[in-house]
Length: 130
Image (cartoon, rainbow, N blue to C red):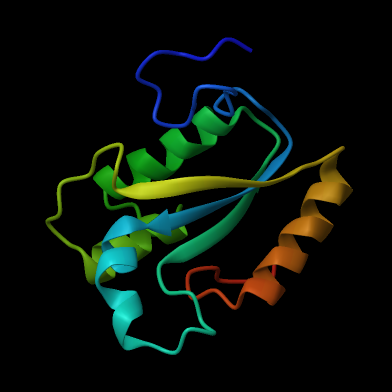
């Protein structure tokens, strides 16, 4: 894929925003700067693991829209921002995205999502992924 200028997900080599069948993590950059200094390092505050069959950019737009509309039932990230960072302006630097795994299909995504959620000891995921 072609790297898009000014895309916050694309770097000089690769474009991940149009990849599909992924396991990804979202890290709240506000928590990364402030909250993590005061907690046990074994537990990751403000981080979420997700899976998508769609293009990553479409899934991230769903998270962004849920945050902006304060739709806490449709996104764990929206619930996090509502509970801990209400009133903060949301932009491309609000959270960081990491591609964890490129998957083959549905079962691969579900199993790997559960693996990452359980092993990363996250605070935002509401379930174990399965």
